[in-house]
Length: 245
Image: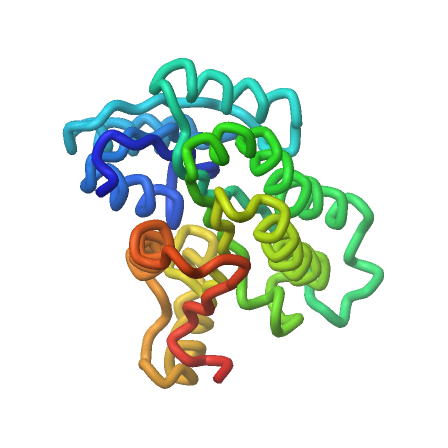
């Protein structure tokens, strides 16, 4: 069903983005692997993707820069001939305790909003015409923080709430050709939480399923939204093991 199609996955050098790239590559999807800093990891992801028998494009760009985003989309289409799937996974955060109001600086707000909200929108806008032509789809990786108000900082939670809202808005304006959905993971075992073993253990124990998510868990939901959910749009699927039932 997906063989020969093309996906652009932002922030796909590591973690969730990497696993989504590999999951789609196993189905024969050509992949643009986007990164902003993690070149070594991006090259490794590219090697693993191509070992699955598909083509890839490695592209360094910050999604907060509209011109870089437009060029990335353009070069993706030039290389592969089309763009069918956009996964907005790139995200940033700063860890600031919620009760430290003075510690949450303007630069923290600017950074998370630029990447997590504006960057998501820039990518969707740049890809919109081609995705409509291809009757493609968009998956936005948000966060349970956008629903609970919890998370690494108040600014981060607000940025993810905004991303969920943008997902709904774009689902309306890009229909009926393009479906736009989101995924809101709880804590995921990635390098963001590396070294926080006690914190992860506490969260896992408070989850009905008894563990935190893996990047593979999120990738499977992304795959399902892309392939099996043809009458679903504007929705954000929570992947938190039941933590916030």
